[in-house]
Every structure is written in C-alpha cells, then in structure tokens.
Length: 99
Image 1 (cartoon, rainbow, N blue to C red):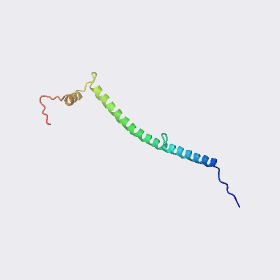
Image 2: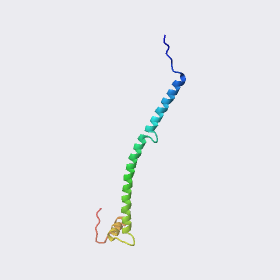
Image 3: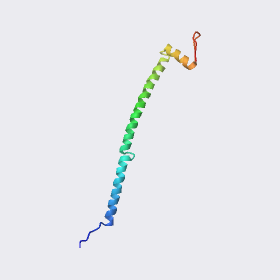
Image 4: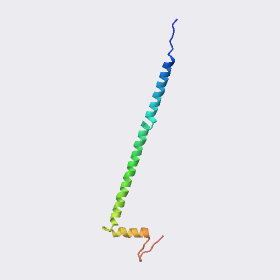
C-alpha cells in the first residue's frame, strides 16, 4: 500500500495567507488610491483642468486689455461709450431705442 501524505495545516495556512495577500496587493495596484485606474482618472482630469486654465488665461488677457483701454493713461472712447450704454443705459438725444 502506498501512503499519500497530506500537507500540514501550517503549509495550507501559509499558502492561503500568501494567496490572500497577493489578491489584495493586485487589487490595490489596479484600483487603489495609487492604482492604474486612478492614474488614468488623474490624467483625464489633468487634461480638463489644462483646458480650463487656458480659457481662464484667455479671459485674463481680455480683461487686462479692457482694463488698460479704460485706464487714465490710455482711454478708448469707443469702449467707454459702449460701457456707458450697456452698464448705465445711457443714450444720446438723437437715438431711438426699440425693445
């Protein structure tokens, strides 16, 4: 008769714990805070924020230009007239407003 040897309980526990740790670290590497999926999310968010930054920088340049054109050193009369009409609702005496 041949006798088969069964692995000891300690070996089974060791391999079970090792397998559980391997599964945990694999899961953490893929879906954890610093995992692959999070890295893809961060890259996509970076692209969106870069586009938003470009839009805000364009607005800043536009506002700086308008501010300079309305400053004491350089006065654009057409811009001043446009702002007075839109903000204050001013009209000249010879104009007709249709609403």
